[in-house]
Length: 485
Image (cartoon, rainbow, N blue to C red):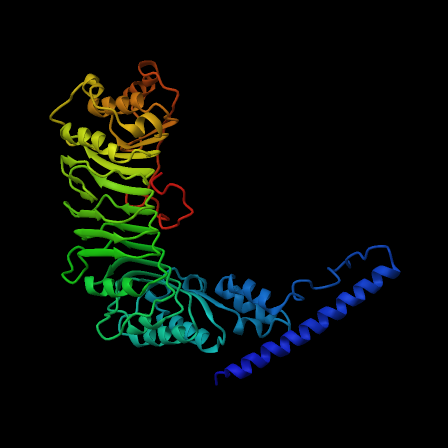
């Protein structure tokens, strides 16, 4: 029988009373001994005289236990009578990889039923709140009722973090997930988001939402975002392209959102209508050709990209980029880090990219990804000399990274142009397409210092793999200074 709240409070009160009485007596005895004996007490040969860890308050020990792996946290109950009841009331940290008994995919092996029984028993016997619930490589098959019971139990226990990764993809998740009001972080992979037609989401405390290879309709996504008043990070990656019910358009109206990540997604329209605190908008290189990105109000956006100079339609105020057509009327002063993709099939995209930089007068870091499919035009270096002035190159640009460099003449001339025009450039980093440098490529780039007067440091790097070839897998982490690099 599950203990009532009164009994739980009673246990806490009794434990705390005994603890503080014991702690007070030990402290008093120590002080008396110090007055009578000036020689400090040395530890005994078999160990310290006092168990200082066990003397800590329950709230501190519970916090320690909640950050231990699941098995280790449960094992603290056998340490002594002092620890026996702490785990049952400490915030639960349940991670499938820590209870799998060495099986890498516990729910897809022969021990499927045993694994699920273990999880059910843990949730049944644990009386306290749930800090984190993480299942990876889980296969439910026809056992969705088991998952529904877990989610209902987690909702009642005030779960803060849920991470579910199914293998193979799970059918539609139970609607009980929508009732977890205490959720701070929700990460779903290989699943089908529950329908919000009958139940409105209650994610009033949610700060992080990550959906990977997860089917969610446009109506459900809009319903979720409308209730997330505290959301700071939103990530949609590896979304199914062929599912007809999947989201195709997204409108962002959030006063709390700081990070938006979209990669490998069938989204055709991304409209940032009102995001006063948005700091970074990261767009993967594997998007639908012609994806329309519209920024209406995002005054604090410091990071933007990747924008494809050939396929992305970008609109910000009265500035419009559509293919090689560019109309600049609105400057974006907040952006300090920009990432763009250039296809050197013709020189038009490179020329458009140079003109596009005028939209960002305070740009400090520029990432450029090269795509080369047999250039039809190979203008020499003199072509770039006649390009008009670009403010960020003259006053602010300090770092430039070229990715997927193949060493063609048009790429080399483009590198020379930026290297020569960026007057305050400090670092020029170049990464080859196949992580290998040829002797000719190295010699051509190392000769830059002789041909161009610049104090910048040239770095020839390799093996800098990023998530989806675009940015770091930890791109949603706001403490990460530059997710593109």
